[in-house]
Image (tube, rainbow, N blue to C red; front, side, top):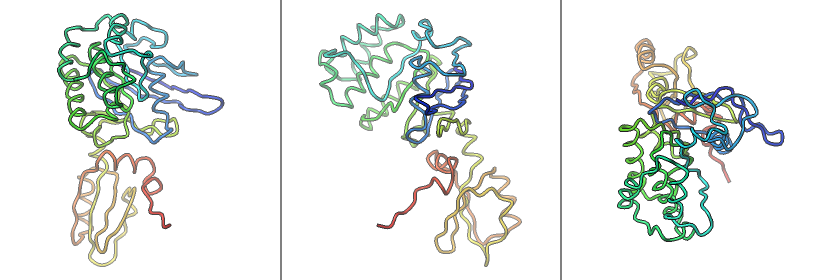
Length: 297
């Protein structure tokens, strides 16, 4: 549904996006992850038509998104930095959204009122950060969008409300085929909801793959050797650490390939564990050079 091809965007000579290409399929939940300053928010602003790309294209169902009001009526974005009109309440913003989005549902708005227990007459700017986010989700999900774009969506929400919000979103994905692109630093949470992950760094897409494929092709290997460590030069080792006789290796390759290698090397002990999304993110971005380092003060 969403195709971004060769997207580049610069600001005063700084290249925020550099030839980015991603594909988000209809009805999928796509997680965009990357370090601070990697270009995530710039890509989201280009996708939602706020920024005009310097080069490349952004299309939804084959149509360009920039200055395309018909497509934008079907897309809702919840940015990290929320905006509302001065002194506007949730009810005031509901009237604004209803005029902007033809599919806005009063019925759904009233149903969600039982979940987002906010005084809809209170000015949004007087609400806490978490309640402002609840207001944003209340309004966004009432628009019944085909595409939902989220930038740090559940930041500030308590654990129960986080789960409630994701339950509503995933319910729409399952029942209505809603397409979701979400950028977040909470990789543990993305691991539970995303089916595809894109890693962006320094304005470039480093990799884009289904989450299950990522977890199948990077293995955490814990191994103890009989005597000296054998030659491992034919293994793609991304990171290694040791604690006593136990060695932990982050290895690229399938479980079957690594099992065959271990059968030949005959270690005293070995075990293979799947990596979390957070671990994959760290090692794919540069392995040992990107991992957390200890600083002696």
